Image (cartoon, rainbow, N blue to C red; front, side):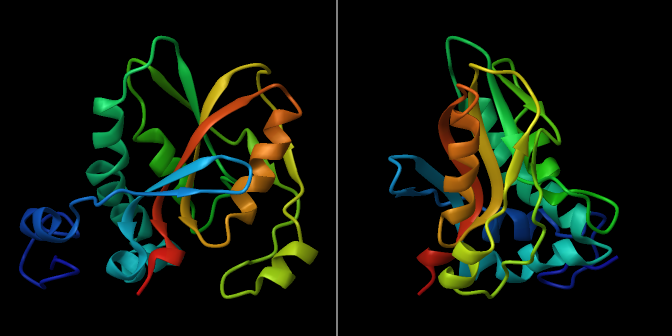
Length: 192
């Protein structure tokens, strides 16, 4: 197979050389209105084409590589005195896998325990390319099914307006869940 980026022969879908050059995280920090910090590993414009592979047959391979180069490295350096859970936002399966679950799974470590399909949107409308007004009129209406009074890291692939992460945080607070922060691959607002 050929590397998606340089088209050289490669066993992984993105060769190691391209991973080293193009997939080194540059973490950005964004504060949402509810005083929640969202850390993103990449500039949206740098990985936009890779993010959109989630709708294709190769998406799970691409997301595993993105997760290894960002979420896994984060987990290896994350220290906390007590166990923290990672919860993916809306882990519905698409193309036979959940791209958010791949990211959350990469956080598994001594202090982070990923749990899956615990925060699911009841409204599955597609937000891609939609306005803030559209998003406000079509809330996700999350359903949470897991432990109360725990510490969590929220996981999603992209933050655009911050509305989805904010709505997810508000739902979790109803159960006494402390959202420490959120992690995403990219912040669409950071585009040039």
